[in-house]
Image (cartoon, rainbow, N blue to C red):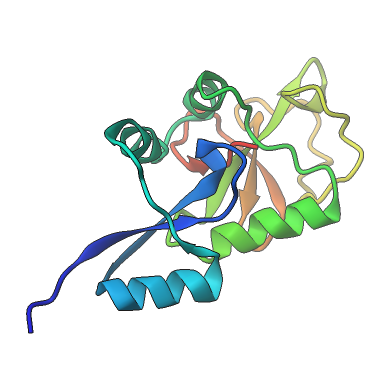
Length: 165
């Protein structure tokens, strides 16, 4: 029997292109891919045209600014995690993929304070211990979410995966 390898792309939300696909880097037979997707997400995601596939592939690692431009170009912004629930959902999403240890979120240090780039208020906080107390970070002025669900300030020039929200 010939082994057929599929690139597994998972349907997770019906909202917009940047949120409805998750790329799982595993070589699986179609039936195994479908079982994996149904177990961890909703189902296999159909890419209906070349443009959708191209846009999905563009969400590989980027600097914080590149990630922001990508999300904005697709009529969204980097994700704001406004509550414990939103933070847990984002953490669960990145834990089930084989992406980097952390992902960019829409948190940026500007004018002596941490802000969400889309204007949402920074009420809920989940910093790694000691990170929030850093006053005026010199290079680590962009926010990232770790696979443990904590926020870190990180060098904006690093290339990480990201979450558009």
